[in-house]
Amino acid sequence: MLGKLKYIWEDNKKYFYVACILMLAGGFIGFVQADKVEKIALQMLAQLKDLVEKIGSNNDALSVFWLIFSNNVTSAVLMMVFGIALAIPPVFGMVTNGILLGYLFHKMAESGQNIVQMFIVGILPHGIFELPAVIFAAGVGIRYGLLMIRGPLAIWTEKGRSEFKADWVHALKQFPYIVVSVILMLFVAAIVESVITPALIENTIGNQIKLIPNK
Image: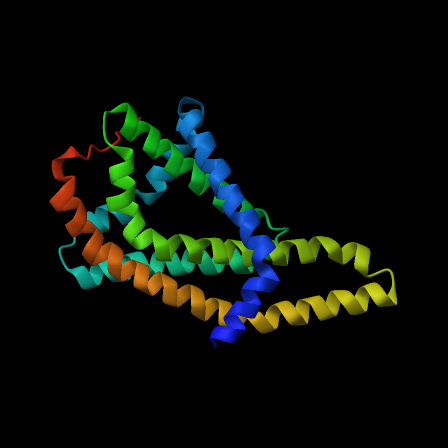
């Protein structure tokens, strides 16, 4: 299994790098252009409001875990599957999620909070599992999208059709391993985020955290 995953990483790493760069670019834009992207960021926060309220009002760690885990798995799998739509969903997802994170960090810094401490305590513990899983999923979705873009050009020659079919067969053979890997990473991330991260925040930052009001 580990050997197969190593091969999958080598075979797809350029797509993972693209997904990572897209998220970092979105984060940079969200941080340095917070005022200009505020409308987009607040719309995204509004979409997350129900999930945040459910998590915040639930004292049962198991229920919180399931909410986080099911939401993340659904988002990741959809990015992979709907990558066939010319890679637009995973590209859009990575950029906008980066923008949201950058915007939130800008607002925290603006209100005098220690964003380095917040990152280390509030994101890093579960992020070391969740972010690679999301980038992994987005990279696969981008690969599928680029394969679809090649389609109209490939169908005109027998060689092109043969290579196009072979590339799809090759990519789809990897899909079950990728899905299992993503789910396992998100499973661990959800455990950390529902149990460990809240305790770390409470014991280190606590009341320093300020909510960003909707406008």
